[in-house]
Length: 130
Image (cartoon, rainbow, N blue to C red; front, top):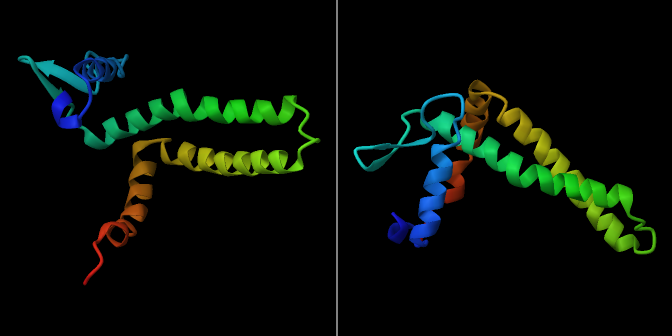
């Protein structure tokens, strides 16, 4: 698996261990070990949503919090360009946060959003004709 993903064995091992622990309320996580083989749980959309929720919580939310803290706690009046750019970033990230919150709220909501996005996907990934 590490070779196929072009990552170190240690990194692959840590990632798999983390995925095994991401479902604390049940006996198994997103990835289970069956007979020495790592198996992805059968509920694919549910798994992807859990991963997205976890990544948002661990990565996106702290970044947005830090940006808001920077804007509220530091005097940026001396450099208008920096303040304006950070304010634009905060507006964008707040909008993305709102969208993510709604998309990740539950599986049915996510299915609706994915259905909408799938109408655009073929246009985005289709190779250009020669």
